[in-house]
Image (cartoon, rainbow, N blue to C red; front, side):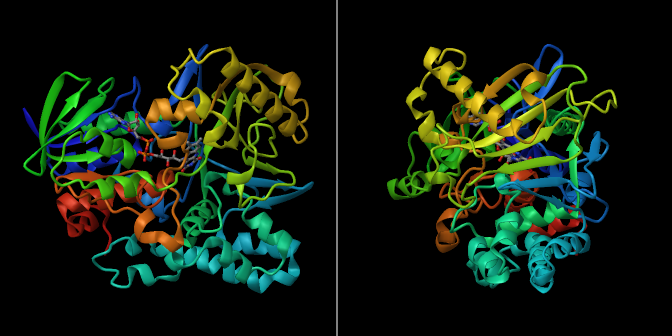
Length: 494
Ligand SMILES: Cc1cc2nc3c(=O)[nH]c(=O)nc-3n(C[C@H](O)[C@H](O)[C@H](O)COP(=O)(O)OP(=O)(O)OC[C@H]3O[C@@H](n4cnc5c(N)ncnc54)[C@H](O)[C@@H]3O)c2cc1C
């Protein structure tokens, strides 16, 4: 059987493309290497409890907001979404002082103006720039319409310069950037990434009760209901090119599947490695893609708590002590932990106590590179010791902000960038994929097209990471097949 489209990877991007194309009547086959779908959305189960691996919360899901329009289309809105506290969805504790991120653009300006009255006008400007990007970014990516695409300030300016030039109070600047462990801040981070992500959460912030796996599983069910095929344990081991076009994929080294078009949700470097022989992929292109740096990885501790030991917090905690938020690449993340995101899972029974929490902290690839090539669960004693030490650092650090944390721990499961590399084929165990650079936008912001005409890319490595970014990007990939007018039609965009 020959499919219209074969999709390599059943992460969010691959599944969303699979759904959109199936909905438009194309014959689709999604191939996921893992035992479970979802990539960074995966949850794992231990002793009857589910733990999130990557994704923890989304923004902009209220009626009329940007992710809502997309999730309505994907039929994901009846999943158990849980809104975080309007008065504080993210708490930022920075160098001993606490600040609340409140929901709603106006409320946000009001809250911070009350803490920094001399910065009221600057805060208004800050918020209006974020809102402009949030409201218009989808259109900006429509290259066909945005003639001056690369000239837009959100693309030609760094987030760092924008903050420095807009906000004069040094402390406020730090605080505003303080919920940014969900991206890697660095001096050349393009403004559009910082603005789009921050704005979406300020609009509204949500957890999902029961974990992110439900998003992936629902998308797969929807694809199957439309006649598409979604398979797990199906690792694509080769993309076969004949006369300058892909003709088939090889699965698990033995089975061939043919298609007219191929979409890869895998990291671009991993994708190109699958094309063993090519007439059109030049060495220089492969080298260019392989040479783009990737964002940092994450160390995650999924903690099962003793019954009724810690109250559930309907907000996230971002904790920092004496750290330069804009330069994690130069922090020795193996020997110190001075930044963490704490996320509480929504209690299944409506209890006021949390059953489990996750501690996430940036981890550079160099910390674990020595164990690259070892197999999951068989990396050796020294790796287990390393993870244990890192976990102890995390608990010591987070324990300063969460009373009784250490005594509340019943069990813990930890993962490192190596875990992500092995489970999702992300390069260098990167959490957020290719590191975009406003000074090298043409090189670091990839389009869905590749030199092979019927091989397209999708996912977080192209334009934007995160659930909203990947969802938007999936439409730009599908537009290469369906046309942008069809996409606008599907999303009811005028
Ligand atoms: C620790 C962490 C925390 C995060 N927290 C948040 C958050 O709170 N909110 C938010 O919005 N975003 C968050 N993100 C980001 C978000 O989860 C990702 O941007 C998004 O899920 C990436 O989706 P993707 O489809 O691009 O890639 P992936 O999820 O990486 O999917 C790629 C898929 O391709 C598969 N694959 C690769 N190679 C092959 C092959 N050869 N054959 C078959 N299959 C293959 C992989 O197994 C994987 O399933 C977080 C990410 C991490 C890592």
